Image 1: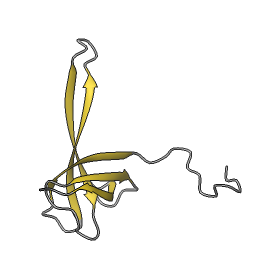
Image 2 (image 1 turned 120 degrees about the vertical axis):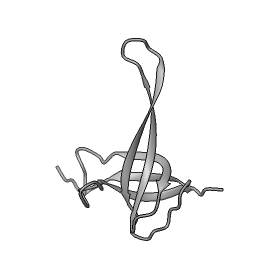
Image 3 (image 1 turned 135 degrees about the horizontal axis):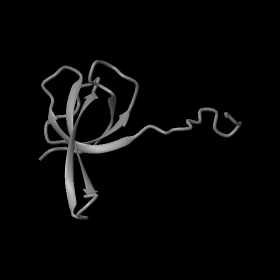
Image 4 (image 1 turned 120 degrees about the horizontal axis):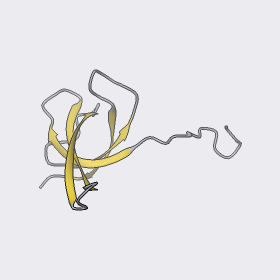
Length: 92
């Protein structure tokens, strides 16, 4: 499984999502809304689905309205399964 060129190779890479910070009231935790566009199975119309993710932000960097990139991680608490990787765009 591990070879000389890439010693840490994951068979199933972690999911990465991009979304908007909805809440930063908690300490070291953000709530990020992730929109996905899905084709309706029967009617074919494109519909938007919004999912709220609880994200670990150890440095409390991100603020409400920021566009952020998050990555899947091990469970950090009852609801937190994502970690902040970068702030793509700051809120104006």
